[in-house]
Amino acid sequence: MRLTSRLRRAAGLLFTHTLTITLTSASLLLGAAPSHAAEPPKPVEGSWVAPSFQFHTGQTLENLRLHYVTLGDRSKPAVLVLHGTYQSAGAMLSRDFGGQLFGPGQPLDASKYFIIIPDGIGVGKSTKPSDGLRAAFPQYNYADMVLAQYRMLTEGMGVQHLRLIIGNSMGGMQTWIWGGNYPGFADGLVPMASQPTEMASRNWMMRRMLVESIKQDPAWNNGNYTTQPPSLRLANNMFVFATNGGTLAYQAMAGTHAQADKLVDERLAAPVTADANDFIYQWGSSADYNAAPGLSKIKVPVLAINSADDERNPPETGILQAALKDVPSAQLLLIPASAETRGHGTTGMAKFYARELEQFIQTLPQR
Image 1 (cartoon, one colour):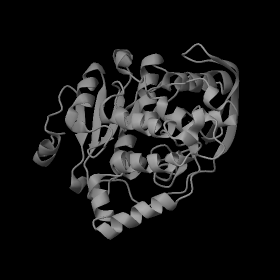
Image 2: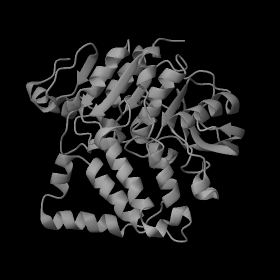
Image 3: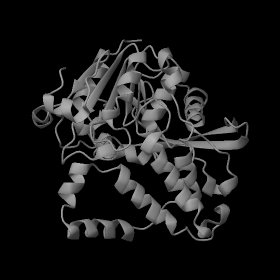
Image 4: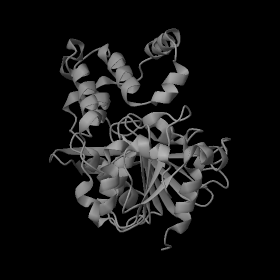
């Protein structure tokens, strides 16, 4: 689909060699999925425990637990759904995401698919540093997290093939890894709010600053704190304001000094539910991420979904578009920025791409 002149100016480039789907403002209003959200089916919780799990560092941990939730019948085609950093499976059951995808008649209708949503290593009810090892926990990375997911599916759940893998942010990066590490395990891949290239530029610099802000707080005490370091609250809110939310959306929400102060005050007053050690590991796990070497191994269709106002993966760099040239069957869906989008958080709202996702699934080869 041809880019509009407005988007050409915004992006400063043309996308070639891959099929690029671009939504205009009119199509968002007239052609997007209905904004109402159907209730997703009731999730079922479960856990898989690896008696021994070896990390990329060579460290081994006994009884690594990976918690998950499922929706639907195990006899149906399986779909793996992967959450973002600092989130857990519950984030994918929200009305904005699961409420637009998993309900009756929706793209991933749980009466037609078996939906599997794991808590990644280090979050939710899966094994994490705050369980006891604290800063002595093995340093895990995204490849370790994907390996754990693969073992959970094949060893723990008996799933040998997936209809689809869809992931958001960190989950999107892990979807790229899945494609290269386990070619053909899924019929299709939908990485969102992500790039397959190495962690660099503002995306990594801000993550590094987030981690350093906590580690350099004397209250952290090398992970041996008795109360959560004050820097955790400040660093996290600074990171969120800087790399998530959308420029036009923030202008609409906080276009006056008083509105901006009110938003900051609300964020700072919110209770801290995170653990500093868990937090450091969660963000640090992206340090060596680079799925680019595996792109040529991906032979299944890919629908990459990003937002034009994504602060962590700005489309004007052309990095994602260039990387997609190495993927034989890839499409890029770029959601235009507006006051309704939320920057890096846009893909957490499935109304912007539910129809295109359904069309993509319908074109996947049957196995």
